[in-house]
Length: 264
Ligand SMILES: Nc1ncnc2c1ncn2[C@@H]1O[C@H](COP(=O)(O)OP(=O)(O)O)[C@@H](O)[C@H]1O
Ligand SMILES: [Mg+2]
Image (cartoon, rainbow, N blue to C red):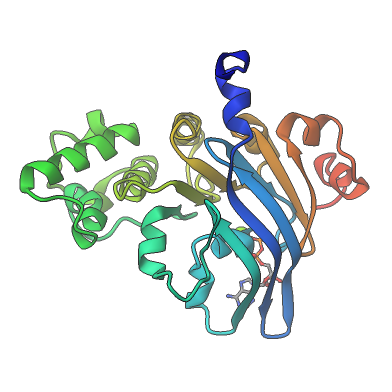
């Protein structure tokens, strides 16, 4: 029965994303080598590993962002809720509404704060009226923990905000289309420590609703925000497990070398 489990352990076991034998090549560069993994729903999963090991490449497989890179070839299967996202029937634009992405450098559109958030709901026809759109914008800004800071200046340009505010605006923009998965590629690397702490707190909150996958070069950040950690090395997924286990009791010598600072 349900109440025999804590909410935490129950939700930790539900798979959202399944990757099977994923290979990625850029021309002759073999960037991802036969990676198979199951990523849980309502959990923060961190991808860690030395620069160039394939973290961003693998992340971009999950919303087919690699499709936009001509020389990039993705093989294998990626399923979300059991559905093959590389199936010919799948529209990548629709997929990217369902699998939102936040980038390293905050990249608000050169538009108002309101229009940044309203952009996705508008192109996907999610609001039937101005009032509904207003509601989506407010809800998304609240979820991204920035509503109070911007509610009196929604028509001001998004690019006028501080770096940390811009990143939270980009998170609001990503959640506005009601995604199920949020991909974040080093979302705090351009932020100061205070803005980083705010975004980390937000990530912890977002996992109640989304499957969050975050690439980070900071092991401290992985330890702070994630429940599961995947360690990549030279295109291989070397180890994957509970974050506390990866950091305290790694099973592979390469993981141990990385977390103790010997490689990376
Ligand atoms: N757009 C691209 N074109 C060609 N090679 C790329 C491209 N993006 C990444 N690579 C190569 O793929 C490998 C993995 O890179 P990447 O996924 O960016 O690693 P990470 O995010 O872990 O630093 C590296 O060898 C990198 O040079
Ligand atoms: Mg990267």
